[in-house]
Length: 292
Image (cartoon, rainbow, N blue to C red; front, side):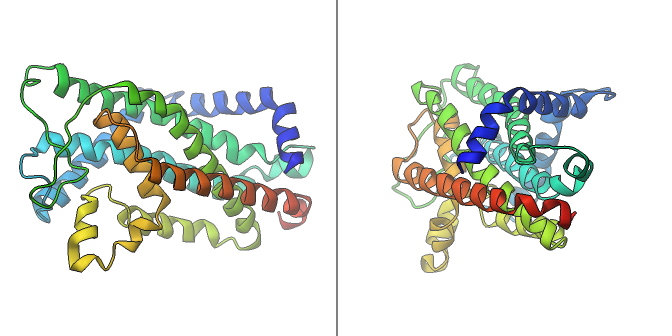
């Protein structure tokens, strides 16, 4: 692991150059430019809103309207999209950059890292939209009306929380760091496994879809906790993305400090995945030319 940190320290400029190049590549030649970073989450939002609230008639809080549900879903979609993009691109990054690895002395450990940073920067554009939506609820024409929380939507008698902007927004950098560590660690593992088994890239596409629907992005967590006598509640207890998205929603939507129990578990898992993934990647790095 020491070699990994030494490499990152010595290649800071190269890492940043890769991030800048990737961000430019997203928008160069595009008529809509960075607006696509806003358009894609919004398109997904409309699709899932239609499916879950109209077709499947998913029940949220009694006092929650379509706008409340939309902003709640958008927060989850924005975070998940960045995470899923990182996993997908990281899994195939060594294969796609085989020319660099085979023909030059190239620090391949930078590849999953720059992809993660690029996705997070792109995600921040979507988070700005989320914050603007919350600000509209809090300070807009309807600010006098209480907007119910969807995070704990379920049993009658549960004290609802309300949308707000507040000091807990200072936790966002911490959440960015934990998301980065978790994503990079998984990226290290998946990109290496993809060299041994090229089907990994295709499997991860299926896996992220299953993981997405196992995470309360489009439905309240209470539906899992209270449905079927709570027999599937364990899915939330072992799902780091549930912990992460709930922490983001607490900070972004409700002006509340994140659940420190969830955040603590997320921190432990994120650091453990990063260290384990980094060690696995660095020990296998010498074999990359032969596997490519």
